[in-house]
Image 1: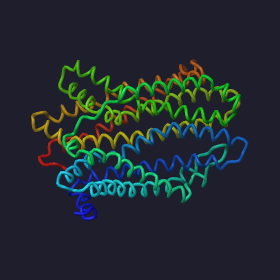
Image 2: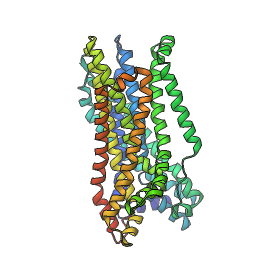
Image 3: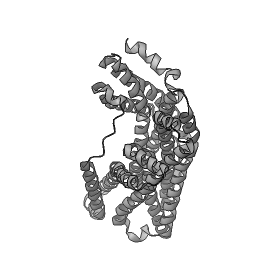
Image 4: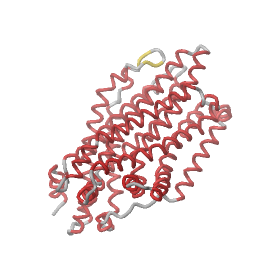
Length: 443
């Protein structure tokens, strides 16, 4: 049977479940919407020709660097959202005799269609909200129409998000194309290689060294070099967190498995240990927003000095930029947390039903799920805060890091991040109960 004849059958809600189709489309829509707002707002500064344009462009690049990794994380979560369920169905087709070409066409086609629909909705939402972004004042005047994405940029954004989904589908297809039984058996994901850990630590050391020489770089090479060092440095640091996060969670989970004394503790540790990368995807967003929060806190403390020196207008603009960056990070984190938790429940529906039918009550499963999320969350928040502090100290000194305003902003950001994760756990509890107590597969 051809891919064109199979596709409508596999895409029917009755076959997959409406949530399996709706969640990826919503995720791609939210990702595209946020990308459209961020790119449109940053682009506005590069249309300026005033004397202060270079400084505001520097701030825009730093904000983009701080938001790039959280947005990429959300985009990756959207691309992987239904990958496990899709792999299972396509592996079954392979076992029934479907050709590699048919399986490949189905996987890429499904992911592309869902991403295209979501991206179009996201661009429309970004266009609708652009006038509101245009009301935000900088340098004494609102951004106005310059915050709007040009049509060519909007089309390019839709194409980029759609290609991301197609590429993700192609990468995930390696397991189905090579060994369909490997997918059916749900083989244990590979651990993070030690080389990745070494490279991540080396990358953080290089960034810290570059920040230590920040003033000399600026004196020698000018504003362009400062922009490059700040933008690339913060981007690399957040990427390092992405690389180190799963490894750290794996180490923590192995320690907790040996010391677990209750069923929820053991089940939580085993859940994290089964796939540290999946555990990181549920808490990594808060780690990244904590990183941004520490920098925002130091920046807020620094603004007090600028206002005292008579730079009230500039300080107000920087404060506005910090608020936008933190709010954008939180919106991204909230979307990522909700989607990944819902996807985690849907992906693990077979295990949840098996545990429930074997005698485990839903309350125990929910307690294990909460611990599997909140325990890693506390670890990554601490690591992210320390990493941000390591980078900020060479730039601005240790005193600003201990400033009461820095501490207040950082604690506030961390507390709000934890509350977002807790709200996501609470909101998805009914879904867990429905999945666990179902007597037939919700597919």
